Length: 317
Ligand code: NDP
Image 1 (cartoon, protein in one colour):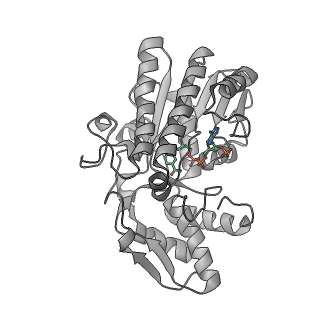
Image 2: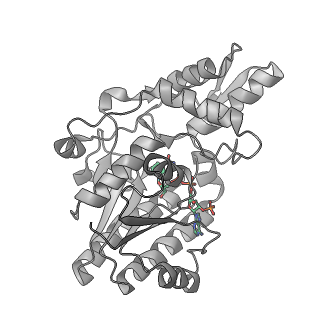
């Protein structure tokens, strides 16, 4: 990347987009222009609006973060919308990237796209070894197909489309909705409410499933690195180490400690859904970045809890 670079960041107002702005102060390098856009700038499910956005900013690079995403409850409640919205966004963005001869696009996928029947840790090579887990599967399929279409654009049109696959992300600016949010943000909100009301905190599920979690600013830095350095057709998993895997129960304990909640945490096993363990290997990433550091989960949760408390009135809930 060099002078004259304009990076269009779709989904620039979301959790990861906000973190990208925070770590870079807007543009990671002074001679580059990073433009962060949201659905207020263009509804990317609409091709005409997407084309107008590209005509306006004429990007040389695209960091594609925009998605209709959320926790498992959201993916299960809006099966059709999660497919239609995400497929439309990806289809329109990819077409405009090709039409505008954009030099490179990096798309952000997630670990729900890995085959459900495979034993982990998942590697990039296993991505197309079987279908994703059935819970909220239209969303997973929509994200999965972004990799298929990225490869198709590369092979047919020579486009430099790269996919990064990230593990669970959390941090300031997340969606803290009790019904639509991801696990950490929803727990932070629930814990805050339970503390205020002096009640128990009820967490959906057994608390036993294991996941890898990443502070949004860590992912933002890795995504910027991917934009600068990674150009392969095979995607790259951006994840902390397998040894950093945590149960929902452990995360709930950290959230309670950071919130100062001393009540009981109840796990509602009748709402147990999803896979027992989702683990992804970061071996490929470590080959390029052997010294990459990740924010310890306790520190990241403390920052998230503090942010939520300060921004309670304006946070996405
Ligand atoms: P958020 O839900 O926080 O933000 C979504 C962003 O997409 C917002 O900026 C939103 O704009 C924009 N957007 C949604 N719909 C449209 C639309 N129709 N037209 C234009 N823009 C739209 O997402 P995250 O930051 O959490 O996720 C970013 C990317 O990372 C996504 O692709 C996601 O799948 C991926 N990812 C996320 C993980 C996570 O745990 N959060 C884990 C792994 C990958 P607006 O603010 O206007 O609504």
